[in-house]
Amino acid sequence: MQMIIRRLGLVLLAVPTLYLITSYGIGHVGAGDFIDTRRLIIDIHPDSWAALDSDDWFQLAEQAQELGDSTLDQTYTLQALAANITSGRAMARLADIRLQQGQQAQAKQLAQLAAQLVTAEIETHLPLAFFWAKVGNNAEMVKAWDMLFIREPSLRNTLFPHMRAMAINPSTASLVDAFASKPPVWWGAFFNYLATDAQTTPSLLEHLHGLRINSSTPIGEGEMTAYIKRLVKDKRWVEAHKVWLSSLPKETSAYQELVYDGGFEGAIHNTGFDWFFERHAQIKLKQDMTFGMEGQRALKISFNNSKHVKFQHLWQRLLLKPAHYELSLRVRADQFRTDGGLQWRMRCAEDNQIIAESPVLKESTPWIAQSVAFDIPPSNCETQLLRLEAASTYAHDQVFAGAIWLDAIQIHPLASDKP
Image (cartoon, rainbow, N blue to C red; front, side, top):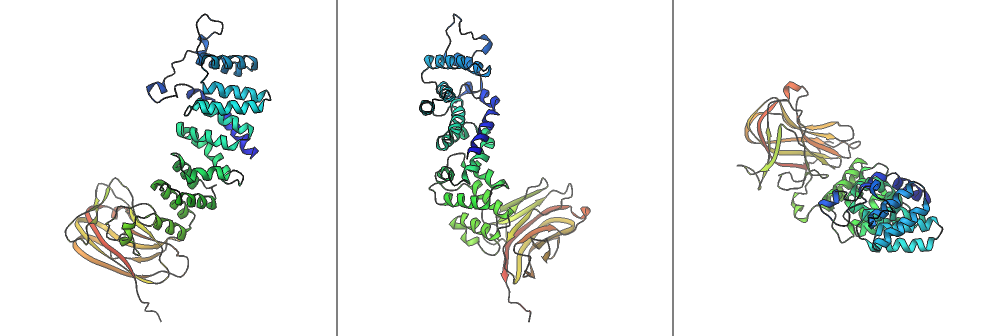
């Protein structure tokens, strides 16, 4: 833990610019928060006839510290407190001075008092975080971090790696667990950092996710999506599918067939094992009402034929077990023009092997049914990709105009006809 504390000290010392930027106008939110109205240090003279306020004395203390004059640093800090006894940052500086003088007990009392004097001042909590790191009080240090994460989000990227180090250390993990059980506003950003950073272990993510599941605060969509994406990236397909299913609202149970929401009735997309609608300037995907559809909606794909597009922008990830299946669907094409056409392809995600292809759609047509039988091989095909694709690999064939409608996409197991 001492290594983490030493690293934290170096990190905080490496952000003097941020400290100066945030060392004024933080007591309340308003236009003044972004304007430094204090006098320049060059205009402040401790022996001037003009009365100096607490901010002036604090600036002189900062200057004395930079010059290495510890006596003047203490003198000016005490003057800052005399001018404003409620100055949290001056109290935090005095705590650090007392620590340097070897008066650790008094230093800790002053630091505690500084935290009580303010509730949201970055200029106080930043030095307090440094102070508690130096004395090894992790509980007080993370309290200061909590406020810094809320009031100055730009510090998160600097401190999140240290928060993760605490989460995996048995002696400090409970401090992070407390945030997971009762998440503050920055928790989603922290979990997203963990989920997207390869250095985060799967066991830590699973542990924190479990705490979130059992907390009284519902998991946000972004946090759940980040966790599912990480499980998918790690190819932990079964776990990813289980977490994804648990995230679905109860009313979606009617859509949970082998193809999720094959009728395009629901509103959940791009999260795990549902439909992924990928954006493109020449393509518009929209769930809408039309004649001849089943249910309440179908999917309309509209094309702008100004340029070619290698269409692969509608797909779903599947977890089919090795067996014999049939893919069926309904499609309608309105004023549809293309040379190469579109077709559904089923691929094994592991090696991109094509295991099924639907008939190619190349022209306008009323509602028609399409189907294709296929087999999931017994190995190297744990997860599959069902995707609508440009049938041709040539650019000049990948030009589409008009629109197509899709509905009732289903997969059913079939009795094998193999001996």
